Image 1: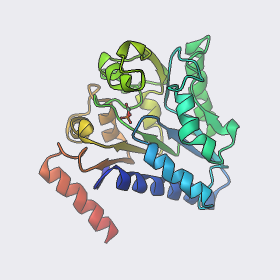
Image 2 (image 1 turned 90 degrees about the horizontal axis):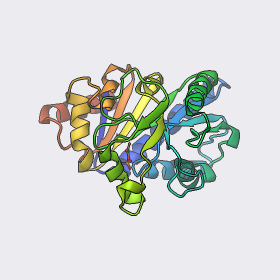
Image 3 (image 1 turned 180 degrees about the vertical axis):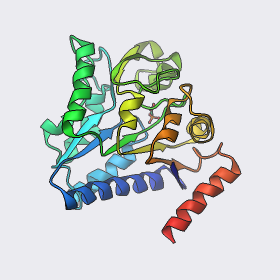
Image 4 (image 1 turned 135 degrees about the vertical axis):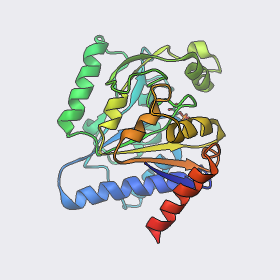
Length: 264
Ligand code: PGA
């Protein structure tokens, strides 16, 4: 696992956006096959998406040959609800880039047959060729996508029940009322994320510090599902100083030294 530590979320997001752009361009230079990316919602990716939008508007990057699959969606929330992940993604990314509408995939949290919806999603990912890169954030409890503590590390896309902690954290988008946060979501599984060729996880702020330390220094455990990244051949965590704040001094120095050596 690589850990990139930057001063703040702005610098971390710039690093992440440049990394994604470089991967998209690198694939486009060698093949006509689309770049398949997993995307996330939340506060964390907003600055990264803003930089990707800037690049597209400046003609430096194109999403014309990118296929995306979002990692999760609330169950039962109308698609046009301002807090649906459909709304979020259109507002913060899709409406401002050139990704063709037919390349955009987001789970339908109102599907009449949720089991089929989740199975079809996994099949569509395979049909697209599998993920080149999965971009994710993490929860304060170490969840990756909505894979809450004790989710199987072998899990695939399915309906999940959110923890009370997550509903409380997300209630800031629902009038600060946890009971207004949907109790369930559809989410890709841990194994779905780990199936990507590369996984890039972003974490900003001291609220994420304990989860970051658990993911990097703790055991591989379903208690902190993002720790599964330890088993991925190409996992990167991008965090700011605050989110790195609970790492051991020696771990922090090690990751800084690796990055300095690789850039030397
Ligand atoms: P956040 O959410 O980016 O809003 O902190 C991340 C998550 O819960 O996975």
